[in-house]
Length: 159
Image (cartoon, rainbow, N blue to C red):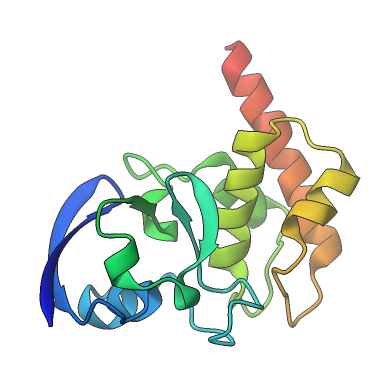
């Protein structure tokens, strides 16, 4: 066991853990940040996606020791001052969720996509989101939600 200071959602949080413990496990079990979901445990489903230095990563496959000095953003860190970010809002408005299990990973990944490609084509959305699995099959609504968030972000930057 070792002491770590993790930069999560803009706050430095102390945690005591084995350096090989997964970031997902630390988030959920030690820091009680349950928005990030355990899906497959193999980095294949995307339910556990977080942003590390702004890039989407599967937290089930990342050891806590390897991210001790990284900027980590979880689904909980996307809203600001009680206001949902454009992707979160668009997912609600487009009803791009059903059971909700994949939703946090989808939203985190889509947020990274829009930072990289503010006006993505449908093909870019599909390619970037490949690997985020929705068991309920709401993919068409997810694509529309990302397109809506893209438009909302573009309109907000013009204001």
